[in-house]
Amino acid sequence: MRREISGFIGLIGGLIDAFVGLLILQRNPMGMGSPMMSASSAFAGYSLLALGAIVFLTGVYVLVARMMEHRSMIGLLMTVYGVVMLVLGAGMIGQLFNIMMQGSTVSGITMILVGLAMLYSGSQMTRTPGEKMM
Image 1: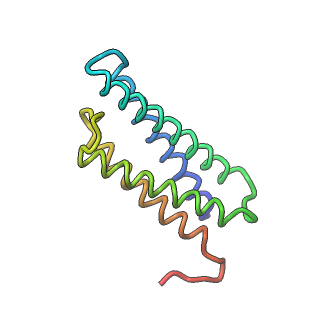
Image 2: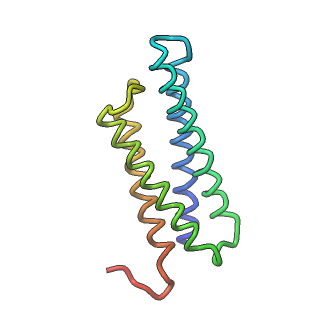
């Protein structure tokens, strides 16, 4: 059951990252505005697309593969993805980047929620089967 939940969290997180990356690329096309704004927007958009693809593929792997031998490695990856999503979500809410668009607060909150879910899922996957959470 935990494997399915972790896989679905990965799928949802990957789709959110990719969607936000596409929104950034669509709202800040190259050649519009200042060159620095366009370069940072393109970098952030493509980075989110790449992160979304990696997280999505990890979610697919968790769902379809027999990963008991790689359980701690996948848990570590999920934890890292969760931290990245928390940082990006906090940056979107705090408008730390020059690439903010309308609706970035909602996207940031969503990324933080999914990041927290990924942290929880990753921590559960890295535990040994007999270890209980306090």
